[in-house]
Length: 204
Image 1 (cartoon, rainbow, N blue to C red):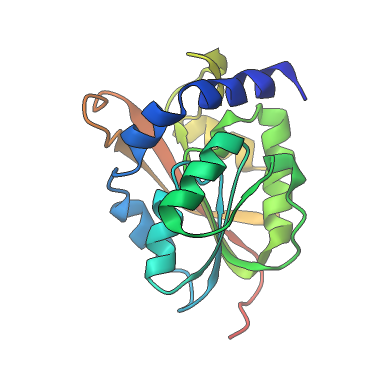
Image 2 (cartoon, rainbow, N blue to C red; image 1 turned 180 degrees about the horizontal axis):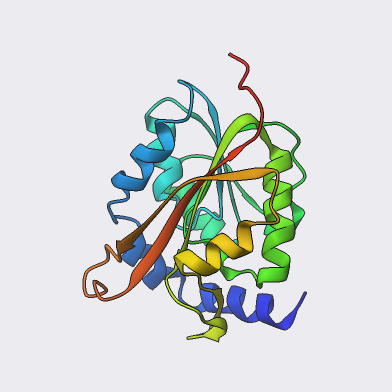
């Protein structure tokens, strides 16, 4: 495992309680509603890097079929306890599903990948989505890439995201929007959010 991945996972191992407590009650309804508007009723969703399990629990309670994964052993355990769902420990690079998901929700998760590896994982996400399936993900707003406060981050602006996405023919950017951090005391931080759609016609 690379040094950046080891360091990032170590951060979550050492800060699991604080991370869980600070994220489990965050209101993500704006992004959730935009995402779910593109998912069929009882569709299958992968919560890819589920963290506390907040969103997996929400989607499951709304009647969607949810698979949840996280790279952190500690967060997998906490998310499983919180959601009542099985949570699989898995690194992003190990995604091997083929045309299984109507939607993949990667909220504040794949931002921990270096941009070279991020592109490879996005290609795996495209393969894992059904035709017409949708990805939601989010990144911190800015131009930084590297270790920050114990974790690896790849940040984006509107311009750098558009440039980065140009080569990803399998996933078409359908929507992008910028939000303030919704955690108390973090309102000065900004995020760039996106929805991307896999080419093809969804089978009903």
